[in-house]
Amino acid sequence: MHGNPAFTRRRVLVGGAATVAVLSVGGFATGGRPPKPLPEPPAPAAPTTHRHSLTAAERPVHLLGPDRPVSPLWTYGDAPLTVIRARRGDVLEARLENRLAEHTSVHWHGIRLPNSMDGVPYMTQPPVLPGEAFDYRFTLPDTGTFFFHPHCNTVEQVGRGLAGVLVVDGDAPQPYAADLLCLLKDWRLDQATGRFLDFQTDAGAAKAGTFGTLRSTNFADAPTVRVPAGHDVRVRILNLDVTRISQVGVMDAEAAVIAVDGNAVSPFPLVAWRMGPAMRLDVVVRAPAPGASARVVDYFAREPVTLMTLVGDAPAPDAAPAFDPTPLFAPTLPEPDLRNAETLPFVFSSTAINQTIETPTGGTIDLGRSLCLNTATYWAINRQTWPERGHEYPPPPLAELKLGKTYVFELANVTPHMHPIHLHGHSFKVLDSNKVDRPVHWADTVLLTPKERARIAFVADNPGRWMFHCHIIEHQDTGMMGYVTVA
Ligand code: C2O
Ligand code: CU
Image (cartoon, rainbow, N blue to C red; front, side, top):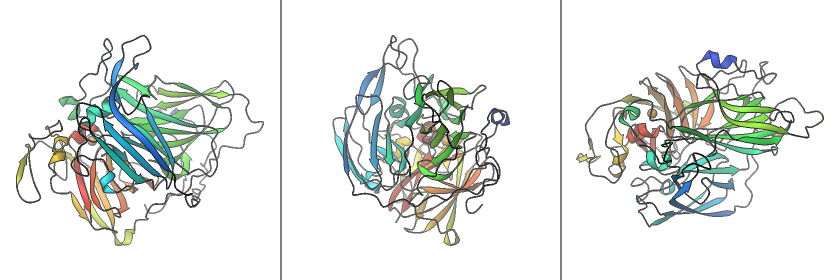
């Protein structure tokens, strides 16, 4: 349980033995070899300030195809996807301008930033009303693959496309032959008109969520990308859907996981890895021979679903060394002090309670009065439910943490559904689980499978009020949301 277990066997990280039999990842780290140590990162170079403007507005995009009706996406810029790139230690200055008809904000998912920059309306900043602007400014403390998104009426705002990617470079000791994004997102579209269908349904919210009608990778249908044959390429997979859990793998090429939620891990073969909404996985793939192809797939289906095809571009190297990816630089995260940790239980359950909540001062408030949209509750954390509509009226915190102390959260999913659980402002170590065999790794979101109990640990080193919620957005919106304080 403690430490990083040696890779004495191939890690089959998911259920569904049938799918795993399809996979063959030959010759890499299967012989009981210990995990490679992660090299220490160099000190960050002199910081650069990156200025970006994010203008949230409706913009028409051809999602259904070039000759079909356009869809009214909400985006941060003229390109459907805004990608921000910086290096560790750099300063990001982003001005959000709201040209939507409702309020919004930007939450920088996975970034350990000051609480006032966390982008949660009412909790960490006032909502950015239509016509208003807000300036975000913070230092990027960690390398990795991150993203950003709004945090109110999220099911619709993200459902319409409002999200961007933030890549913080500086984690690779050697460059890769290519560095690709593989951004997974579904869309709930009416095929005839291109308009959006209802983003939330009661039936979906109370179960696994309401699924899109159209899958996409990088806003296209399973794109094909040419990559230098025989070289190692980096693929940054992001699940930015609000609902769908994918089980990603690579067919017809060797592939290894090098980072989870942006945090380096000692490379291990990718067999299949379940990714809930918000989760990221950095993978190194040995590009196929000239003209040959490999596929990034989702095994969470009867037949593997192709998400992206990689085609090898000539010329191939004369003699490629055996596939053996170099680890990324070690994360610079505070190591939990497990011997002096306090353990806190968190139970994720379904619920059916009324619409009033108690305030810390003993009063009650009616969630019917709020600017955000949802009032129904189907879910709870430690029997406390907090629908998104209640951002404006925070209930008592789920826990009050002491600044600088290590906490072990024991997460118990007592529902028959999966829940990707996310904590703001901190990265945590996923220690162990009663059901799923994962290497010990750092993450900001952990996927709890039905009836799973998992333990995560972290140092509460970032003061403020930090959201703690399921990232299946309909679950978050209907009660599986809370917050902890660090002081
Ligand atoms: Cu990406 Cu509160 O979440
Ligand atoms: Cu959930």
